[in-house]
Amino acid sequence: MSLAGSSYPRRFVPVDADMGDWSQVEPLFDRLEARPIDGVAELEQWLLDVSELNACLSQESSRRYVAMTGHTDDPALEKAWLDFIENIEPKWKERNNRLDRRYVSMPQRTALDPARYLVYDRNTAVGVEIFRDENVPLQTEDARLDQRYQKICGAMTVNYEGREQTLQQMARYLQEPDRRIRREAWELISARRLADREPIEEIFDAMLDLRTRIAAAAGLPDFRDYQFKAYRRFDYTPADCFTFHRTIERLVVPAFRGLQRERSALLGVEPLRPWDLAVDPRNRPPLRPFEGARQLSEGCSAIFHRIDPELGAQFDAMVAAGWLDLESRKGKAPGGYQATFDEDRHPFIFMNAVGVHRDVETLLHEGGHAFHALACRDEPLLAYRHCGMEMAEVASMGMELLASDHLDVFYSGEDLVRARREQLEGILSTFCWVAVIDAFQHWLYEHPGHTRQQRAACWMDLLGRFGGIEDYSGHEMARQYAWQRQLHLFGVPLYYIEYAIAQVGALQLWARARRDKVRALRDYRRALALGGSKPLPQLWEAAGLRFDFSEQTVGPLIEMVLEELSLLA
Image 1 (tube, rainbow, N blue to C red):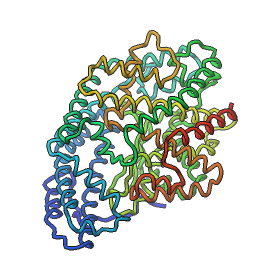
Image 2: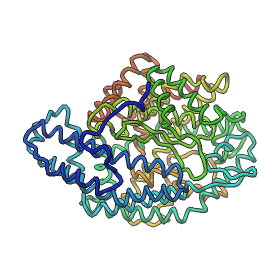
Image 3: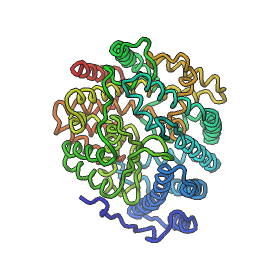
Image 4: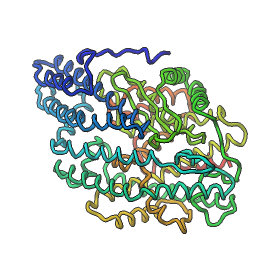
């Protein structure tokens, strides 16, 4: 299979048009705005041409973002990214809004097939509702601030064992049986993060001010209300999030803390300290599943082939095309993501692999996102080649769990048991951490104008409610500022609850696969192929899942995880 050879030629946008040159882009918006539309067929063609232009611009944005995050220390790449978000993106947003307004006002809109255009129609209408010209420069400044945050984090290194290492590379030492090494590594990481706490606080304060102004300009009471509309969250409310928090607090937190007490007893340490959380609880040497990016990608390829030969072929084609940047290095932004190059309709995977088990999970996760992008790449409307993150994360988290039966590619014997336990324990800890981050974000935007001291107090209260039992005595400041490492707070505000919602979906998928793997995979792939063309509950239904995160649904899933953990003891 050669995905790189697949072709989606430009039909409206000139082949040689430079999407980074506004003088070449603007006439295309002019043509779309002025084009006569007399019937449904003309409207549908107009929508396709709008989609093509937006895909071309989106790809230019993704291309520059991938380059910048891969080399935050390269001034030319930084300049290219900033030039796009300052000089192209604001004009693009404004002109796109004018096209959206034209669409919403068209009489032909009511004659479109509702089964086909329901999601597009309601999403566009909400976008028009909240758009304000005066918010464009505010959003541009918000993006600039996020770039500054990424640059600060990308430059964070420490000297250890005679060499300069990124914080991601230092994570390996947190798994060492020697407690002295773990503590040294943890304290170095913590001190390095704290060294930049003040500029990061300043960036975040500025972001909060901008976001408050954005919501006010849109006529909404706070930025949370604005962002719920911006994320097109039609199927749940802030009240549902609070209910979900309580479900996690009641069902997951006790189980998570119980596992930590077991860890403390097995390690023979009392109290448990923050540098004791990543090491094997039986104090065995750390899992080292691979050496280098090639071995990582080859192992994940073998897993994907076992799950489904077609998915394996797709992943191999991505590797051959160079659509992955896997290894950690100095100057590379932290974290991992999957970006889609929307014009060419192919995914790109970015991560910071250092040779630990979490890297395997990350590539399997981002692989799920990539398969999602490929599954719906033939959808002509750009808007339908993407979907809400509550489904997008089912694609990725579901893939992690589907892959869990094949981790013997990387491990054998007791290491295989350890890897599977680590994955399931990670699910419980993820639920708890998501609850912390999401509840924190709700508080942030419900309390505009709060002080840094109030923010810190809220954070500490939430850690007490949802966090673990580890003791931070002597390192209280590290705990107080731990929120600063969560890049979502900076770059994608109020995006994080999706991980917990999607985990509920992924666990349902796993439960179905344990009963009937063939049917579960078939339904999973069928749902991915729908992209974002159906409302969220229908996308879940296509995968055989129930869009619900009440105790009634979550309870049996947590019991399933705990039962599996007991078998892996």
